[in-house]
Image 1 (cartoon, helix red, strand yellow):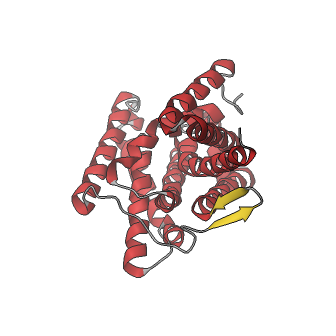
Image 2 (cartoon, rainbow, N blue to C red; image 1 turned 180 degrees about the vertical axis):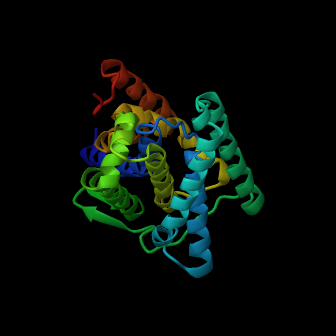
Image 3 (spheres, rainbow, N blue to C red; image 1 turned 90 degrees about the vertical axis):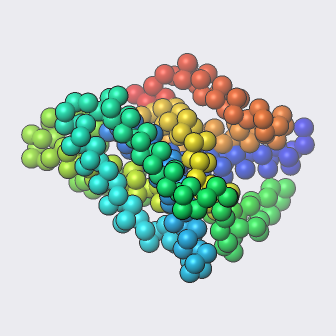
Length: 289
């Protein structure tokens, strides 16, 4: 086994894991904390990719900067989606199966709309960091993977600080554990959940931008990530940002090593086998209680 090949595979896996953390962190909030099975989450990520694509090709805006600019719009979209979900399903106690159908409908509508507007051709963006690599000894660091990984780490770190050092963040953690106790403290659990869900959708703006930096996208590519993001969320521990990051990095390394030494066709099977074995040993996840 070549040492430089092994080193590059591990580093590539870590960088890929950073991207996986970016696309999963929103699910850690909606599913891990709020118990909302938002299977439309990858569709919002692809929507973020196309908005970054429009800004980049029309006005020459950096895709990641474009994602930061439209973050408030995605937050408002998330708040609106939750309000519909709450009024139509959660308030009536129908959030289990009918709520799942609601998010499946959102997934389908978003995907079809993107197909009608953009077609099924792959779209890509241009940026100074797409193409070049940093060379550190025997290890190559592709900037198209390094920059998204750094963005993901910044997003995870920012959310962790928000959750642990602000009243709203602590309220979100509280509503995930005991909504009745939160109500006794004169806080509205529905409002807190709306804010939390809106945050989960806001993360898809940045996740979509880093996705289109890493690879070209087309409307249905989000389906490739539905199983992966929920698996990482559960593996890391429900609602744990640190666990999500560790699980994403672990999965990225496993996929990269498998692709490098055994071929990309084996990568999904080995990666999900790793997830199953880990959950069999620790059902609560890496950082679960």
